[in-house]
Image 1 (tube, rainbow, N blue to C red):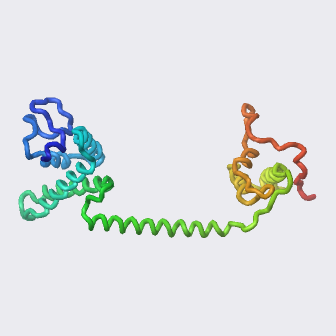
Image 2 (tube, rainbow, N blue to C red; image 1 turned 135 degrees about the vertical axis):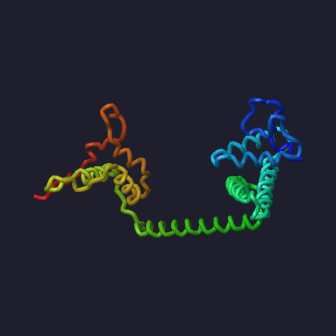
Image 3 (cartoon, one colour; image 1 turned 90 degrees about the vertical axis):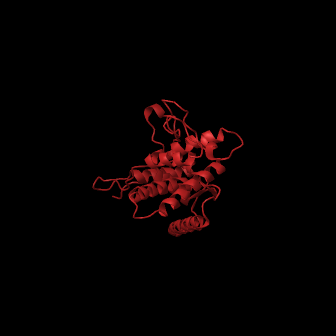
Length: 248
């Protein structure tokens, strides 16, 4: 019996929940599905989730029940009602109402479709959905492969190695480069962020034969406010071995 699937309005309840099914006299046995669908016709799409969840929670509260059974029941009463309306006389005075109901029920099926974790829907619908998913994934894979191919153009087989204990020396040179100015007073390198510099060092150089962690380099580029003077890593004076100066 479908009575156990949906929460009914109590007889003579003058302040029912808006999702309760029935009228002032309650819910007549055998008409539960009809009343569930009558609510759907008047709901906005944004309310579908709340409506479905309200009755699902009621159903599950009965014990020894599953979401799968509830979903299956709802899916079939909606799809069966669509088939019923499609089979009506197209010249009937209620034809426009039937078309409106079909449209709303199809919207509700569209809402239900992503909830189908059990492949309850018809095989042709599932196959069509899987085919569309495969096409989408193939397109994403092609886009990712193209992106990977483009990135590989910038890969190097052997990275330059910073020798001995002079990572700080090398970073000092990078910092000098980003602060150089041209004869016209404009900066040679312009970037709103420090990340291009420390990511370049981490990606394209090695230190004593090992990759350089990006956070290790980043610490040298932390912008320090007076109150944060302890943040970041300061380059020791004895590591500042070179000075880039303008050509005379």
